[in-house]
Amino acid sequence: GPSLVWFRDDLRLADNPALQAALERGEPIVAVYVLDEESAGVRPLGGAARWWLHGSLLSLADSLERLGGRLTLRRGPAERVIGELAASVGAGAAFWNRRYGRAEREVDTRIKASLLAAGTETRSFAGSLLFEPWTIQTGQGGSYSVFTPFWRACTAGPPPRAPYPAPEAIPGLAADVPSDALEDWALLPTRPDWAGGLREAWQPGEESAHRLLDTFLRDSLPRYGAERDQPAQAVTSRLSPHLRWGEISPFQIWHATEWARTGLTGNAQSSATRFLTEVGWREFSYHVLFNAPDLATENLRPEFDAFPWPSLDERALARWQQGRTGIPLVDAGMRELWRTGSMHNRVRMVAASFLIKNLLIDWRLGEQWFWDTLVDADAASNPFGWQWVAGSGADAAPYFRVFNPELQAKKFDPHGEYIRQNVPEYGTDAYPAPIVDLGETRRAALAAYEQIKGMK
Ligand code: FAD
Image 1 (spheres, rainbow, N blue to C red):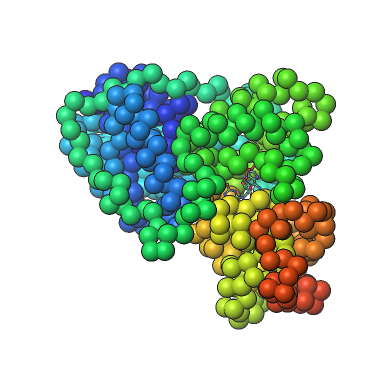
Image 2: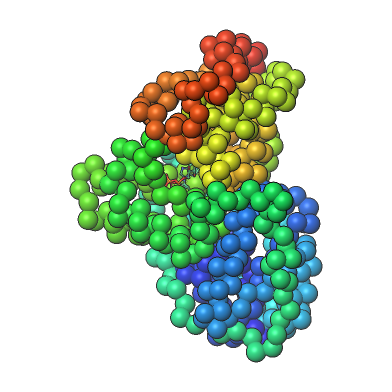
């Protein structure tokens, strides 16, 4: 019978090991994406992620059709949907690339068991991470909680496998497989349509991911090491949402970067190492998530459970979300986020630190806002980043390190370009006064931290 290929966080045709296995098997392919908002524990997608998914599925469906295949869309709990689909097409095999969240792994394990019981060959593959989280172990056989030795262990072994080429044809099924209409999933915002800025900033899909990578390697890689922290320079790759949805694989990025590196010397060459190290932080986030599945809701350092958060100041939270705190770099970042669905990494750190340590608002509320508004909202990197800034996470910045947003602006946006791009009224009467005193709130945060320091 035909091969079922279940697309999830791997919305691409090239370097897709599950698809590759189906192609090698030789039978017709039924490609399916399941919108699962019902399985227990699966975190519902945020608004910006839903917007991205719509575009990415359009693009994937289009690429499949050009090669003779088709994308089937189904909505519902994955266990039921995949079971029914496999039975209705008489699937001889089912292939997918692995996911790493606990709820997703549990769903996949159950589906695998029932498909195998029904006599369907079922296999899962490594497609989203260079290093499967459980394969990287300390000398004692445990997991890593510090990045540098983790990445050293990763890079000490054989290099990541070469990517698979793009397929030339996808043999589809002759019979018609019923599919939902993408429009019926209502992934796009209406009334109000807030996605105008997202449409201007992004083009979801495999093709545009590769265009971004090519441009980045050609124009920006040599400067990446020196300028990656300056938001106005825009030298970073902007690949994060494409990686989140697997429109491009880390294997493709790794090998293309290694190839580009051969043409570089000196500082430009170490830029390549720096860039791959950032890709390594993504790997580390997943390593941490795999070993601490409640990363988005539970402090990794339990002493932070006793942190004396004051009662929530809803007004301050709203001002932060709207980018109207009166702190220019924070507001620039929050407005960039609202408008484009993204924010430069340096500014993410500053905006997060301000919420946690100057407004004394629980990091989970910031994490949730980012989850809803980022096009790259990622189940591992987002909570990992928030816990890193909060000081409660793995290899985190110590709590007492409070970013000073004014010094950060001087250092990383010295001409105020990034601030003016995002806060046009900066410097006029229309710009609000700071809602808090940075020095006073910093002292209050440190005093709160004193109360939990030394607890375990
Ligand atoms: P580049 O500098 O070009 O880096 C290349 C790739 O490496 C990125 O696309 C990304 O996949 C990975 N990467 C780079 N930095 C990090 C990092 N610090 N942690 C993990 N992976 C990294 N990244 C997300 O992909 N999704 C998130 O939801 C997310 N939330 C964050 C929240 C906070 C509070 C912080 C401080 C960081 C967060 N990051 C998140 C990490 C980082 O900010 C983004 O990956 C980066 O800004 C994406 O831009 P880029 O693709 O141009 O990065």
